[in-house]
Structure formats: C-alpha cells, structure tokens
Image (cartoon, helix red, strand yellow):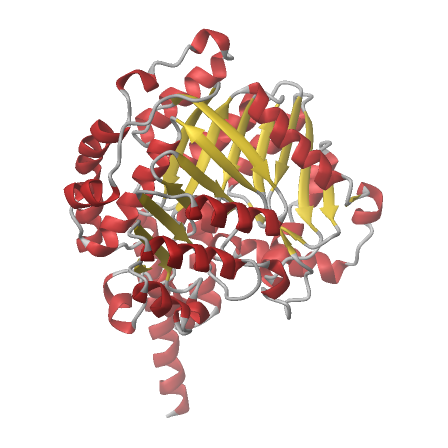
Length: 485
C-alpha cells in the first residue's frame, strides 16, 4: 500500500512539474524568471505549482485589460485639453544623440513623447516635502489629483490630510487614489471617511480578494506617487505619504530616506494623464466628467527641462521601462551614478551595468546597508562579486533605508521616479519614471546623490571576497528565486 501511494505521489509531482514547465515555456517570460519558477515547482512539491498559479503570470484580468486599451484611446481626448500642440517640438540639436534615440524608444514602446519646457525643484527632507505638498493643496483653486502606494497616519503626513479636508470643504475637486495593500492599515482607520465627509473622492486601487485571485494576480500593485494641483504643479518621486518618524519603526532599518521633485510646466500634463488613467481604471468615470469637474486647461512651457514621462505596469507598454533604463545606462560615457533601495536586476540590466564599467565608465551604485526585506537583502548581495571585480563601486548607505530611485549619466541624462532596480518594479508594479534631458536637472540630482555618498561605507572588494561560504550559499540560492521576490 505504501509503495503504491509513494508511486502515485511521484507520478503526480512529475505531472505537475511538467504541466507548470510547459505553461511557463509557452508564456515565454525572461529566462531567469522561467527557470526560477520551474525550480520552485520541482523542489517544492505542489506548493511551488500553487504559487505559480497565484503569482507566476502577470494576469490583469480580461476586464481590466479591455479598460486599459480603452483608456489609451481616451488619452487623445485628454491630450487635446491639457497639452499645447507646441510642447512636443523639442530642440534635439541641443542634446546628445542618445537623448533623441530615447525619445523615439519611449514614444514607440509606451506611446508618450518628450515634452519641452519644464522646471524642477528637488526636496529631500521628509518634513519639508509633506509640508510643501500641504501648502500647494492649500493654494489649490480648481483640482487636486493624488495617487500613492502607502499612506500612513501620524506626524507631518496628517498635515497633507488636513489640507485635503480644507480643499474639499471649499469646493476644490479632489480625487485621491491609494493602493489597497500598501495602505491597508490606513484604509482600516478613520482618515478615509474623514476625507469623504469633506467632499474628497477617495478610491481604493487594485483591491484584493480570493475571487479576484481567480481572474488576476493579487500582488500587482499601484506603486506610483503623483500629486497634480490645478493642472499646473506636480510632484513625483520615491516618497509615500508617510512621516518616517511614524513609519515601520519595528523594521530595524532606521528612517526611510526619500526625495521628491516639484514640477511646473509641460511635464505636468503627462503626469496628470497618468493619474487620471489610473482613476478611470478603478472608477469607470468618464474622461469628459473628469475634465469638466477638475477644470483642466492647457499647460504651457515653463523652464528648460525636456522630460519624458514613462508609466509602466502589467498591460502597459511591455518591456518599455526596462528598455528605457538600459538606454540610460548605455548612454553613459564617463560616469554613471545609481541609487536604489532594492537591487535584484534582470539579466539584461546586470550585463549593461557590467558593460558600462568594462568600457571605462565610472559606475557608482548607492544602496542601503539594511533593507526591510530579508530575502531581497541577500539576493541583492549575490550580484556584488561580479560587479566589484569589473570595477563597479558599491556604496552602502548608513543612515537609514535609502529609498530614492535615481540614475544620472554624465550629468546630462537622468532618471528619477518610483521604479526600483528589481524585478518587481520592472514587471509587476505600476510605476512612473521621469527621463530627463537637461543638464540643470541632472546637476541637481547628481548633487543629491553626492550628499548620500557622504553617509556611505564603500564596499572593499577584498574584504567582501572573504565572507563565509554559508553566506555565499544563501545569497546564491536566493538569487535563483530573485525574479519572483
């Protein structure tokens, strides 16, 4: 009897592994992702298969996919109302040839061209960021559009809430979109109802449920951070609506360190379009109603920065964001500086970084010493050896969890936004990134990166190579499942 049962289990396991492997192969994910899932299915009987069926594919559901396609058509209507026709006429002769190529790449893969004439101001102190956003909301006369991954009660974050309440009470059209999982504790509290009572429209983004898991993945998250006020001021960057003094105090990683950029000029329009598209996906509200209630008007140029807004996520643009990141890395001739809290790159990005260092570019990577994900921490470290041996300089930030996501290439081309250099940001999250073709913007961002370097410990290649075999084994094992972290 035992032998028969054992044979049945073995046969079932083999059949499940073959079925999952066939499904993975036919879906044609990146090789690293495919191998990781087949590895899990083979070495975690049944459990690996269940995990794959739950989170192994970027399933957005047929209904959401249809709505995403419909919204792309509505963008033409929105663009007519908020983008001046001359804004896409960028003087490319003042930029490097690589910038023009990136513009074509983003336009081809994502469908959003570069807009000319924006100005930016960086903020890197959490209190100042939250209070400046609250002040802009207090000055709003027509509309406030906001979307965030996390909202956490307490401290200066409550000042933003209070500003929204005042805006709603004086008749400003306010729409707030917040992720269902990232802000789960906030949704269970009093503040969402407080906003609604003041006339603010508050909407849950990407709700999760057992029924939802049947048609789409529950771990696809809205990771964007966007604020648009009166259609003339916008904010974006890495910071959630949280005061670091009150957020994840038990994670033992110190305070989260973030940066945001306050924008005026042409770039406000595509950022507003991105948020409005997300709002329409969750509410089915018509584009005409949003334009009328928000009193959106044409945005004109203000400043010298030429900026391309690249939104990304399942069902939006395929590998467009990854292609743009590779283009920034490959554009560097002398110096490349990157900051990211989570570093679990796909193979193409990893090779691009090594290739940049190999061709003589000085590559500085600024990563936090400690992160709030133990698995990601060790998977990330598995890449250090190969980067260090080719000359990449790795700097470990000491004063908290550095959460800023940025790239500067030769202080000429920049990336700044919500995207981490990991597989989740590249393939599972809904992100937004600014690709900026402007030296003044790049210099500001580079100065911010240099300020982080002052609080870093540079990793010594010789000392790092002497760590124990146990640590190496753990790192390399978790690297195998890095694509599904």
